[in-house]
Image (cartoon, rainbow, N blue to C red; front, side, top):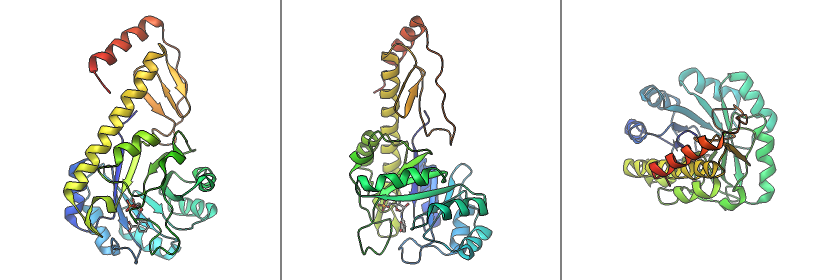
Length: 280
Ligand SMILES: O=C(O)c1ccccc1N[C@@H]1O[C@H](COP(=O)(O)O)[C@@H](O)[C@H]1O
């Protein structure tokens, strides 16, 4: 199981990119949506993307984009992923993915059980899902509203592709959100700002630190469960070879197979190793 991956969305200034890289986030989001206080022009986005260090994936957030807008953005800005945050249909998601050859993350708003089937449908065509709070009726923005949803709705659920948890996360709440949902990736925008559209480097650092700590705790808990079983194990959405744990979404679309069952003596040795590391 890898470290938890953090996406900080809505960067507007070069110092934001520095703060995100310094904190150890894995994704930096650039918003191309005129109504957003975090909107950047194509030229600004290009400068920001070129300043990103290797290993920090640049994600372009668009809302119901026409091809012309995507053409303009992708010709100028070296993005690693496109985030679709509007009402794009399943077919449109597949079309954009095929046309541009970039990984596509589809945001799906969740407010109740009724919203969950869409995650399965989009999960069959997208490279990643962004499980976000559904924007209230009449909201100016389809996301980035600082609103959380009831995390119990998705506790223990898994979809056909890797996914990211979003919606109203903050440095103070991300640990609980990870523990409750089992998310291995988290995304935040307004929760790390000092004012709408103004990122706060200290909150960014605090958010990444809290997310990584929660991820490490979850990893230890899962590994201990596997070791306690005395053999390699597998549950809904996870498997453990007694040493490391994997969720179904890890390593891109790779599906983890069930490894051979360990002999009891090996399991016992590994159990004591977990105790020695004192994790959890
Ligand atoms: O951030 C925005 O301005 C935005 C605009 C339009 C669509 C989505 C937007 N943001 C995305 O929403 C999630 C959740 O935001 P928040 O943490 O609740 O403020 C954010 O991570 C962005 O991916």
